[in-house]
Length: 132
Image (tube, rainbow, N blue to C red; front, side, top):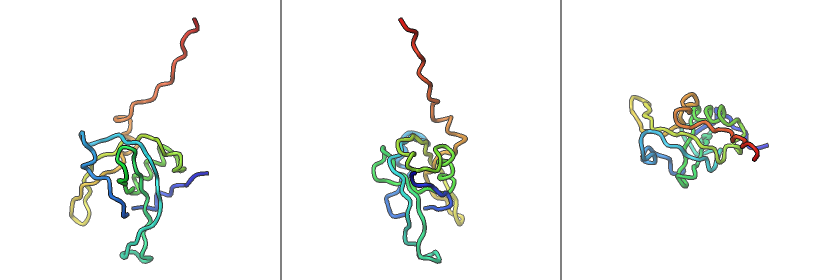
């Protein structure tokens, strides 16, 4: 069995995917290269550590998308809890603006599952050709 994802465990030190990485429009389709889950130092927490989950993508090199709970829940909904099965999957990411403490920050997140159909074409089954 692979690594099971717990969406309650989030957040890192790797270079982050930024809005500048989405070149054309507000949404990009990317291919999952790797999922990582671990801890980083965070002096603002009681334990001094904070859990993080990240994705890297074939198209974006070493840059990581730090997942929030909604991102993780979307990925689990679409691909299941076994993150080892996520590799090679195509996901839409989007530019968003998030507000925290009355400040707005440019962010990148996974497109909500309900909107994936706008960006991903359904896969068609191959039709059998009649025998000649």
